[in-house]
Length: 120
Image (cartoon, rainbow, N blue to C red):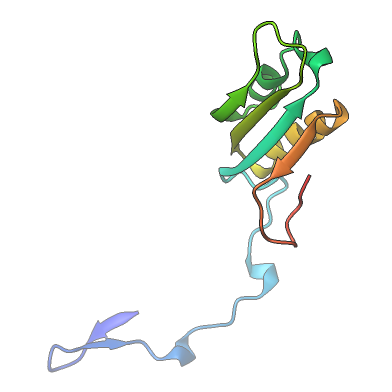
């Protein structure tokens, strides 16, 4: 705590007046972390899913906001579609969406350079 002395100078309260925080002092919520986060991925959607709402399901079924950074998918193409996406939502929503894409056998590349982070 910041206090003022007799000369009107600011002083900080001595550290002895503080306690170390223990893990039991931090409230634990039963719910997952609800803080918003984002991740950027690139995906290859196989041609058999061209008529399926794969990207739309990321929004409607998983509650994400999806920004398209780039896309390559022709109207009458017989090739796979390529998308560069930014996914915005909670970490649980993003994880659920990545599992959905993985279950569809969609190839996923992450922009993560941290080897400790999950890379799909």
